[in-house]
Structures are given as structure tokens and as C-alpha cells.
Length: 359
Length: 254
Ligand code: SF4
Ligand code: SF4
Ligand code: SF4
Ligand code: SF4
Ligand code: SF4
Image 1 (cartoon, each protein chain N blue to C red):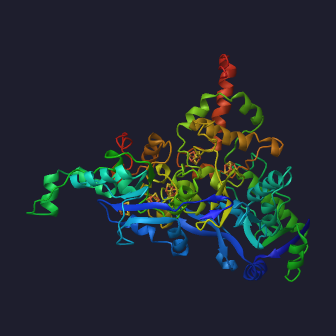
Image 2 (image 1 turned 45 degrees about the vertical axis):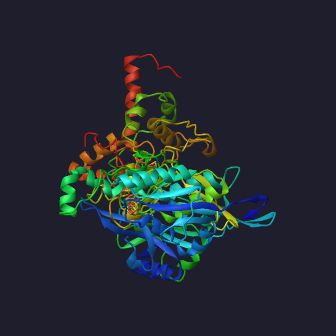
Image 3 (image 1 turned 180 degrees about the horizontal axis):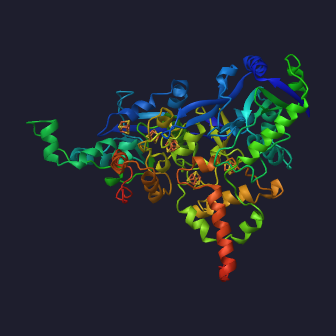
């Protein structure tokens, strides 16, 4: 890693040049909600003026630039008795500017799951390799809990990370591409004073978290609370809408659909991001559903996020951005659900109740 | 049509309109990019909007509209006797649709208002399945041509015909829309069957549920959410009643 300091006015020149010459996406305000709060999304940007540098958080994560909501995996062309399969992994290079530390952590987690397993995804790899990621630090929102998940700081997974130290940005440069491009702009090596300002900035960020989720021993609590009534309680509120998984930066479940072209001369295989909260997520051929109850489906989303699955070495994959909690119309959010589970476990310690039967 | 040892028969199809605006039938002629291929799948036996020729040897009957007169009942029963697959085509056919708003008033009142001084035979609006057995429902006001195309391809190739089971929200999120609840409106997206690609909410108009309930909707939780946001329960009731698609759910404390 190389560190540099750049004046904000010079950084503006840098981003203008970068965004002008590349297909780029950054945070933009799309709406003002009924409580007067600005709503942001990652959308196309062509100059630094388009980028809402002082944005809070985007409603949806940056995941879909790497795992599109819908993606064609392959295309088949039929000829007489034969067929051809065409596969295209290629991805056009893009610039993503303004990602938060937790957003970049989420990409690193997706890298673990999608690139380090037995079957690395070439589709994901092409997009990840061809995306120039510029991170931007920020003060947490009242409901951010990435600090509890240790994802409020980041040291890998980006090309460039900008810490706001007043008149300047403190740059962490993590790729030769970023380094070479920055050479054309006026930067300097950090001085003692810059380093002090960075430390101060990090401390302010770290001290600004208002939400805390106690995740110590959470995986084992989840195992113990497998049959907890907490799941039914929250499940009864769930609308089975899948919104939480769609906005989440680390939910990567998908379904695959194959369909004939209307002229019957070919077919496509499409991948669609899916969610474990949807009613037919665990439905199999013949119509049997392994998870017919809302609470079961909700539980499995929490299991995946906070206990992890084998392909991810049983690590938690939630980064604590609380996008799912903000977007859930039913008011279901990790903080309340996890606190409930903890209370449940503690009450069982004081009441010494017999453990429920496993069916 | 032949490929890889399989021969596909063209679908012998007919389309009939009842009480409706004929917007769904019109969709069949939509989506020009694949229109020729789509028509290639079909052997059209009877379809007033496309051709004046009429034959009675169809297998599939698309039924558009709801039933609001006795002569329609008889016509529909005759179609049922011929069709191997009877499709309720569009929200009017599936649920009664917008026409069902009529059922809130007395027939006498209605005739006096719409056809003053005329003698008009009419009855309360019924959905198709109230009158005959329905084999397949394709909801939507109007139907989504892409979905119709997919279903026809599946019928022609003998593949499983399905509708999405998830609600509209799921598709709305893929469009990066700001939720209309966040903008202070009631939207039926969380209880309505997806498959329309959230066209209305993408255009910033709340979903009125034209595709009917999604699989296993959670109506109590939905009503709770409207209350928690202090939105109007009258507005909710009006939206839920709009296409008559939530019969059986609509009385729920809202
Ligand atoms: S938890 Fe919330 S966002 Fe997720 S499926 Fe349930 S209701 Fe939808
Ligand atoms: S589960 Fe929720 S809080 Fe955790 S990463 Fe996903 S959206 Fe963010
Ligand atoms: S469902 Fe809508 S578009 Fe179709 S016929 Fe009825 S009113 Fe017209
Ligand atoms: S606007 Fe409607 S469809 Fe979209 S997320 Fe909100 S409730 Fe769901
Ligand atoms: S958003 Fe709702 S009302 Fe609009 S087409 Fe889809 S289901 Fe129908």
C-alpha cells in the first residue's frame, strides 16, 4: 500500500478525468423520502459534479455490478441434430466511486465465496477484475453496525481509498493502475500532520457508532436457538418479499432458468439473484417445500448471514450496513432479531427451562 | 416445427372477449421484435382482432374479460365444451377486474345511471372461474406479452407452465426504485404476484395488485405496516378492491 495526500480541488480534477474517460457509477440522490431524508443509489456518473460526495448510504448495495440481478450464463443455438453453446464471461471495465468500507468488505467476502471455493465463478471474476473501486470513508448513520462486525475499516479489496481529512483526502493506494494514473496529478507524501489528521478522523468515525450488536459467540447461540420461538415471532411479520436479500451487499443466492427462444431455434440459461425469504426458495421438483414457514425462511437468512456456510469457512458474511433493516417494510432488522435471540438465551439460563423437542 | 428429434405442433388457439376493454388481446399483437416468431407458434382458429376467419376446432381458448350477462354465460359454456385448455386471460377474466367495481351498486341504480331510459339486461360481474373450470390463469391488466410468449412456448414444447410466486417488491428492488411507502404512499407490491417487472412502481405509481395475490401473502403483516406508517386504511381498502383480486383477504381488519 502507498499513501498520498491530495487537495480536494485536485481530487476533483482527478475524478473528472477518470469519470470522463470511463463508464462510471457513483452515489447520486434519487429522491427525498417523506421524512425529508435524501435517498441515494449507485448510478451512472460522468463528472465529479454528478457524484454526491457527502452522501450517507445508498439504499441498494453495489453488489449488482458484480452479481447482476439477472445475467445470461449461456446461449444455445440448435442446428438439426446438433447444438452450440456460447458463453461470454467478458465484462467491460467500469469505475465504481464512493464505496464505503463495509461495501468493500462485502466485496472481499464475495471474493472468498465466489473465487476461493472449488468452483470459482468466471462471471464474477471478470467483473471484479475489470472494476476500478474507489472507496470513501464516512461518519456512520445512527443504525450502521459495521463496527460490531469489524467492517468499519478496510485494508484490501479496493484500488484507491479516500479518507476525508478536511481540505485534503488521505489516499490509500492499493493498485499500480491507481498509482500510475495519480502520477499525472498533484499529490504529496503524507506529513506528520496528515497522519495525525488521519488518526483523528478514524477515531471520530470509530466513536460515532450509535448502534451496537453483540455478536460474540453468535454462531453458537444461533445453533443453540435453532428451535427458538424468536423465529416464529419475527417470521410472522415477514412479507416474504426478498427485499432484504436484494439490497444486501453479501446475499448471493440465485436461481437458474432455461428458456427457449420464441422461434424455438435456440435457448438461454439465465441466472437471477434470489432470496431465501421467497416462498419457493426451498421448493423442489414435484412441489415439496422444505421451508414452508416464514419463520424458517427468515431463520435461514440469519443463519447464512451470521453463522456462515461451509463454502465460506463458517464465517459471518454480514458486514453490518443495515441496508436490509432500513429497507424491510415489516421492521425486521439484524439488531433487534439478534438482541432478541440473546435475551432468549439469557432467559433460558435464568429460568432453567427444559429444552424444546427437536422434531 | 422440428428440432433434435422432437416435433412441435402449432397450438390451435382461439381468443374470445367478454366484458372488458380488449386491452389484453391487443397485447398479443404487441412486442414487434418477436411477433412473427410468436405467431409462428400459433394456428389461429378464431381471433377477432387479428383475422376474420373463424373455425371451431381449437384446443386452447383464451378468455378475456369477465362475465356480466346471461348470454355470456352460455357462450362461455360452449367454449368450455370445445377447449382442452381454457385460459383466464387478464385480470378481468382471473378476478373480475376493474369491472367488479360495478358490484358495489344495485343493478337498478347502475342501469339508470349509465343507460338511462333503456332496457338493459345485466348481472353482477363474475370472474371466469365462477362460471366454468379454468385450466390456466394469466393475470395482468393488461397481461405482460413477454410472459404470454413464454407460456405459449412452454405449452408448445410441453414444458412446465409457471407464474412467479414472489411479490412485486422483489422485482421493484432490482430496478433500484425508491419504495413508495418511503414516499408516503400505499403500494400493494408486497402482496401482489410479480412477473410484471414492477412497471407501475418503476413509473412511481403504486401497485394496485392487478396480478392478484402472490403465493402465501401475509395480509396481517401488510395491514400492520400500513397502520404503523399511519397511512389511510380507506386508501388501502380502495386499492385492494380495485381489481377484486384479493377476495377472501380483503375483509381482514383493514
Ligand atoms: S425480512 Fe423484511 S425485507 Fe426480508 S423478506 Fe421479510 S419482510 Fe421482506
Ligand atoms: S444482512 Fe443486512 S446488515 Fe448484514 S450485510 Fe446484508 S444488508 Fe447489510
Ligand atoms: S385485464 Fe385490464 S387490459 Fe385486460 S381486458 Fe381487463 S381491463 Fe383490459
Ligand atoms: S414501491 Fe411497492 S413494490 Fe416497490 S418495494 Fe415498495 S412496496 Fe414493494
Ligand atoms: S406493478 Fe402491480 S398494478 Fe402494476 S402491473 Fe405490476 S402487478 Fe399490476
